[in-house]
Length: 140
Image (cartoon, rainbow, N blue to C red; front, side):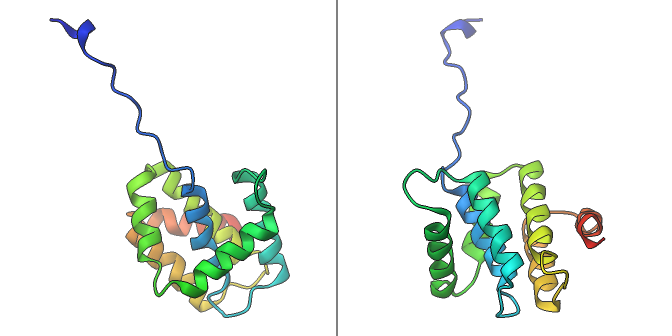
């Protein structure tokens, strides 16, 4: 009845670093075989340029932060938790697409890269059919 007195529901603001968190997961995929190919690195740098404000740090400096974070991290469960908490289903599928794109950047899908992607997708609540569909997009 007095709905005009109620405050409008404010849209939940996502943390500004959620894109960086997703890129940390992409780095984990690229580094799954303990060898980041120059094409994988270049693609990660391109993703950094597309998604992060470079007014404070350059893409190479951000890549170094991601790389250091990967060395310090025991597992990527915290990354998955942050992604699940802050992204909707469509955005989580976009993260999955980025993971496949990074994995196929060097034209070779390593078994460990695929394992990390499939495990991440499962933890992100993405159906196996969508995982396979997005994989096929980048396979060819």
